[in-house]
Length: 206
Image 1 (cartoon, rainbow, N blue to C red):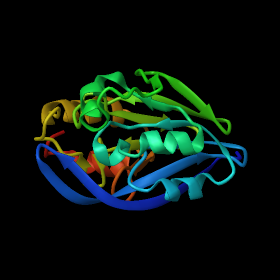
Image 2: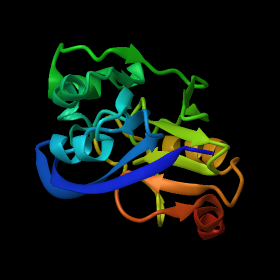
Image 3: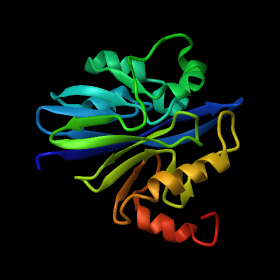
Image 4: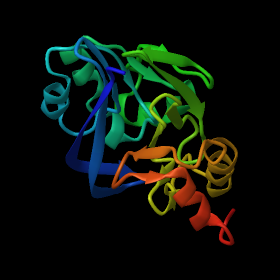
């Protein structure tokens, strides 16, 4: 398998409901020597460009539309000449940052993307936001969860457009159905595994 995964951490802010917080976001780039995809567009276009290098970026796969994940999506799209792809259920969240500026293509549950011989399946996992989407690769034994699942459990709710009940259902029904040794690449913080999070949830919310 020629696919390789590159990673960087970028720093910036997250704003919603009149509050702004300092955050660090993971950036993930998956591909081979010729092509790649980028997961999310946080804070620092140059950092993402460095990870991509001279490769053709065939898509910017947004896990959701909170501003710390999409604020620089149009600029990154222009720099990489790559389409922005988003689940349209996050339209209202996207519009908080970008108004009527459109993204380039819709992502639906079950959509398949292939990069460097690796398949990525879009899993619609609402709760953190209505359109939150994870990307699972059986070949890699990995899932890119954005802010749906972290080391320590499901992502934050309690803000606009979010639901604790919904995110718990998404994690339980979609993510915890994956093999337990699946590595979870998150939108913030360290990696974990499906099995680790499933065991931690037992007797709590699972």
